[in-house]
Image: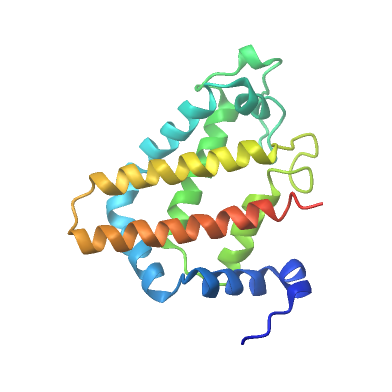
Length: 190
């Protein structure tokens, strides 16, 4: 039986990431499978991002979080929710962030720098990072991750690849998104 330092799981994000990878079975083969998708996924990133934002705009519970100034955005902010649409500069700014996220997943080495980035993705949706006025409720984050997972699955299922590669790709992304979801949820723990 392997000994796990449970307190370290809470304090050391790299240790936590390694633990999750080992427990879930996310390893070098999964990373290689995800990286192999870079050329096929790159042309679809804007469609994925648009799909996510078209989902977010459908409900005030998700869309309202884009009214306050986003961390790093220097342009004009909307006065109210009704002023915010897909063409607003702040939404275009946020869409660029999501595009970079998808690109990092399929191109970046899975090292300490990426682990820090994935952890920051979770933290930035709370008042602990970025704009302290923005705290996206956990239910919205979980709904978003479920939607992103389904959107990626649908995209992968439409890609030209053999059945074995498709199965490996779906499993690899599923594992990765569960890890990402944990690195989001940890910032909501009391």
